[in-house]
Image (cartoon, rainbow, N blue to C red; front, side, top):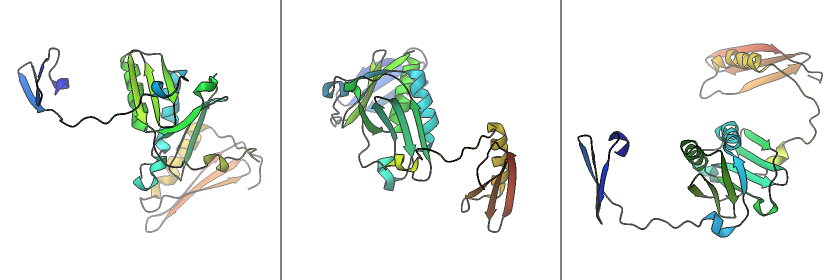
Length: 238
């Protein structure tokens, strides 16, 4: 209602309702009578924090949040895991089928060390507020129960997602045996050609690394099959 009233808005409130009026429109809205749930402030639980540039948090959110789970049965993965350690800041997201991990090297005070899974929307709201208020950095605090982002006169606190996060580090090879280098746009174009036959029921893409060529193929019942190739820099076995 407030967003639709333009510049000037008159607000009046009583114990049971609120009235908003402006530019020929008037809204009368009931007020909630229940007490809002109490949430501890992170600053009350810990003195440790680290100042993180908004550009860094935005990049971490953009490169990982798409991989977070949205299934209720996997509640522990319904968020973005942020880790503060001596190595810096790490963001992790997974839905059990894909895994996104992004590291940002930075100095982190010992008292700020911690890890937790924050709802993706909480981080997105914090970044939106930072942009609106032109904040260049946010203070990040992590406790065993909550995570907070504060700066430019605002503070957003979110309760951490409960549950045991999967040991994602176990699926990341410490020393990859072979590495392939491929031009990003060429790979993107090949993917676009290969997935044409895929449907909601058949969404598996097969990748074959052979010599200096990567072959992408797909096969969907009642639709057909497809394949596409792209040049790569690879010296490992097929």
